[in-house]
Structure formats: structure tokens, C-alpha cells
Length: 286
Image (cartoon, rainbow, N blue to C red; front, top):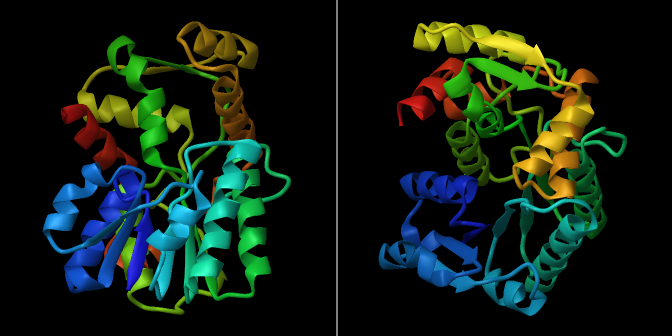
């Protein structure tokens, strides 16, 4: 059996759907905070159990019988994030899981300028220490993050953000399909995978050109000083840690931490990953 955490979230849910295209439903299970949100999966024959990263005992029950477990990283930062991941990894060991897979990030490193990447590196160290077989999916930077940053520019035509660098923006669906491919080809990767990235690394200057081509409207790229961006984020209701996290992602991009473009994702899904233009057009059409 393959168990997936966070199966009502954007990446986890898509991964489950791709697994169900490859496996009988009785070989797929999910661990979710609120089983009611996975009721449709239960009705299709997927094993649904309640599991919370803040309740380790619930995770041991949710992970029972898993030959492989996919831990979808938490939407938290710093010690709170790593503590949650530690609880899940410890529960996996107690439950006798055969292999642990984890959704890491292409820039995972202890010295990253992006807090989330330092959290991923610490989590990978925890996996390494278990002695179990493990795989860290070094996912490309989610294109959804860039599209969120572009939301106001979509209306104003001005991409006003801090100085950045090229980033291999990558689509959730391609990454979910790759995760399902790796889960159903057990042992294909030991430890961190190569970067699982979209087909190009783009800075927001290039993104402005793509937006103009896609819409037929002009887009400008304005560089906003970091502190001014932080104050704008706070004024729009972002908590200070989130504003700082966003700012650190631009610093990491300037440092060249997300520039890698690798063919592994294309090989796993059997086609070229979606381009940023395709993802932008799809999102903006909605």
C-alpha cells in the first residue's frame, strides 16, 4: 500500500489521482486532517484515515501497512515546519513503513537564503538518520507562487517586485504525476532526486514578456526595494514571517539557487513539462 499525506491539498490530491490511474484503489491510502474533505476518495475505495502532524499517534495509525509513504511538506516555516516533519518521520518509523518519500525543493540546502529550503534540508537530514530507504523529490519552484505574485500585475500591467533571478517555475500537475511515477517504480531514486523542473529558468523580466505575448497587452517590470515590498506585504495583511519568507525567496533567486533546468521531470512523465506561458494562460483564463 502507498499512503499519501496532505491528500486534500493541491499537490497531494493530484498525486493521489495519478496513483489511481496506475494502481487498484485498495493499494492507495491517504492521511488527512479532516476525513470529510476526502469523502469522495473513500467512496471510490481509497483508505482514508485521520492523521495530524500535531498528533503523532494519529499518524502512526494513518500510516499503518504502508510499503511506501509520501510526506507532502507542510505549509509552515522554521522550527514549526521541521517539528511537524519530524513527527511524521518518527511515526513512519513506528508504523514500519518500508520507504519514505518527501516533497522537498530544488534549492534545499542548509545555507540557502530561502527559509523554506533550509527547512527542506533539515528534513532531508532527518530522513537520512532513520536508516530507512528514502527519496527526496527535489521539486522545481511551484509556478503557482509566481502566478500569485503576478495577481495585481494581471490588472495593472506592472510587475512591481524585488530584484530577482532566473527560476525554474514548475507546474503542480507535472510534479504530482512525477511523484506517482516514482512511487510506482519503487527504489528508482535513493536520496535526493535530480531537480524536477520545468523547461526554462525565467526571471520576472522574461515573465513580463511572456505575459505580454499571452495577453496582447503591454507589461512592465519595476524593481521595488526589498523593504518597500515588505511594508506593502504587511499593509496587505501578510504576517511578518510570511513577508520575510517572500523576501528571502527573491534573495535566493538572485543568488542563483533556482536556476537549474533538468530533463528528469520530462523523462518521468513522458513529455515536456508545461511551460510557464501555458500555466499562465490556463490560470488567467480561469
